Image (cartoon, rainbow, N blue to C red; front, top):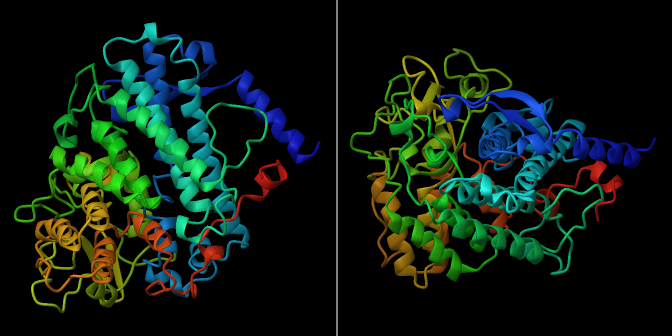
Length: 499
């Protein structure tokens, strides 16, 4: 049996026998655990079945090969050259990834796992969507809108990140008709046809727009910490920041439109999220970032428009960021004090107070020594083990909306004003619009803010790619090119007929 026939058999078996993992309900939505497997008709015979299936998709998104590691602080920030120690390593996957050696066997396997995981998330979303309209009578209240809207938004976001990984950016497309990735809207045993960049964008936008309309029935946001100890049996409409909620859908639309160079729509959606005032900036005056404190908030959770909840984050954080160990190891992800001083511009007057930086009062960094500095964004330990903020991995945060608005504003002065809002919240000096008065100067300041803001969050790589940046700071990968910015398709997909 060749690989194509083998895959066809697997697909048919998956389609006929097992559709989704069934997740048992319990008294806390964030602590749902897998129970058994079930057939499609059983899974989707009740409102609770749909809810359990959707929770299962979010748990998939929290795994290593998706937003729980590689698409946040792992692979993406290795590619962006944010972990200095990977510069000296060639014997492990991240060391090879930092050199964009995509033909290395371990790198090839890692990329293939990301591809498979994202399409698995898409497949599970599609199963939720498959007959949901025919089963609308199963739902009460706003639940139909929430389940369908979130499934559509998940499908769109997963495709968007696949597009950002496995296709050139808009400015680097060799031709408008070049095929990129498939956009899968239904389960099929037939290989899916890859679409052109704009076709994929159009389908992403269509899904997000439909999700936006559906989710508009429930625009409320409940603060993460306020719900953490809830014993309510009606938890599904809660924890909205840990779900692709109404505002998160708008935020992803802003991100998509900017990636497609539609600045007018990007600005519109970014402003809608900003103007909602539902995601306040972390208060730099009284923010507790002591990682061991019960109310520690090194991750600035109030700013999360959408974040992933990962119950075992402590294990991963201890492994990669050495939050409780005393010596650095090969698997760790760290940088140096000198590099961080450059990123946060500590030598400039007024910049030492940046709440993201290395000041002792901020405590967002664990300085073993000048050559070994770890981020404490994902610290889980001490007396704060029950702190809900210590289980979160941000996917989209408020500052990005200001950065999008700054870049998409019709005038430089307006752009500077948006950027200054974030700078004020971070307790650093505002920019003088009389000095930052050209698009080039504004872009330079925006780059510096992306670098400060999104360390260990995975967004800097996508910024570099969208801007087609040729030289990455502290890079061991040489001058950038499409060959380095674009992941190769997994070999198994080529053999399976994707074209």
